[in-house]
Each structure stands twice: as structure tokens, then as C-alpha cells.
Picture 1: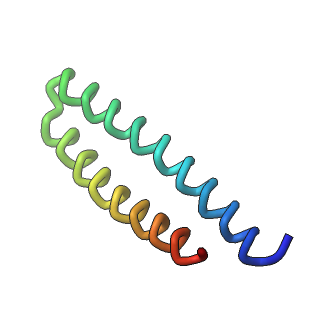
Picture 2 (picture 1 turned 120 degrees about the vertical axis):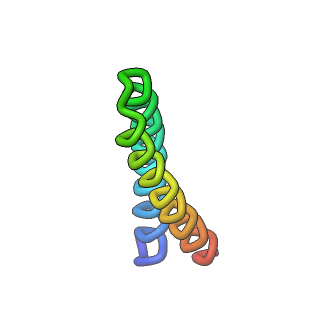
Length: 66
């Protein structure tokens, strides 16, 4: 397996891992909100926005390998 193929596998793994975390973060924000911790939930949702942007960068990097 050459370097580009390894890079593709790594990026695909990171994307999958990141997407799973994004789901967990959103669930956690909902739990915080339900518990009345609106400010904490807001901060977690802000983090989700940033993590989503990083995932988009990884998707672009993956696409650029083609």
C-alpha cells in the first residue's frame, strides 16, 4: 500500500471517528439542556460547529487525494 492509499484510509477512519463523536456531543448537549444547563449545552454546541468544520476540512483533503 503506497502513502496516498494509507492517507486515504487514515482520513476515512478519522472522519468516521469524528462523525461518531459529533453525534455523542449533540446527545450530550441535549442531556445538558434537559438538565437545565443551557449555558453548558450552548458551549458544547459551539464546539460541535468547530468540530464539523474540521470534518469538512478532512473531507476536502480526502477528495483532493483523487
